[in-house]
Image 1: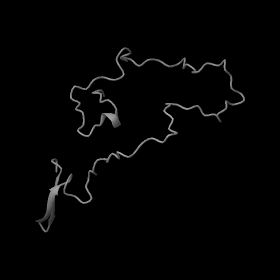
Image 2 (image 1 turned 90 degrees about the horizontal axis):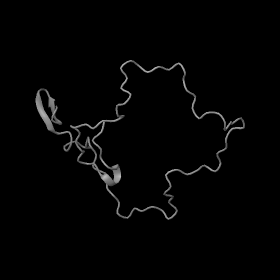
Image 3 (image 1 turned 45 degrees about the horizontal axis):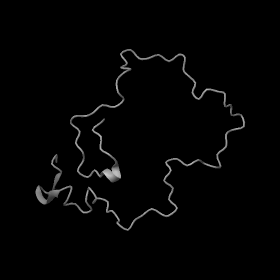
Image 4 (image 1 turned 45 degrees about the vertical axis):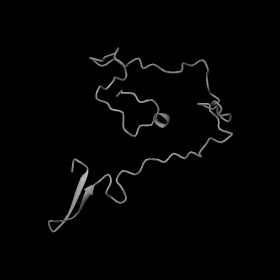
Length: 112
């Protein structure tokens, strides 16, 4: 049902009913993650966002003078393309979820 409830009928007699969110075993929506206050980063944890792979090598035929990207000379912009529009726009109807955790999930943005 649209209100997240269920009714179980056998021979048109109700034998069970309730909420899909709280009355099912196991529950349809599991309990939230439990934060472990004893959990901490190891002493050797590296905070760098990217770590250079020391074993990575360029191919033998690598040419530093070649362009990073090759432009497609036959590509054309579609008619009606909105070239100056932002990639993302704010959604005025967006609502921050109840279980949103800024520490875990990051800052909430009302953007779609």
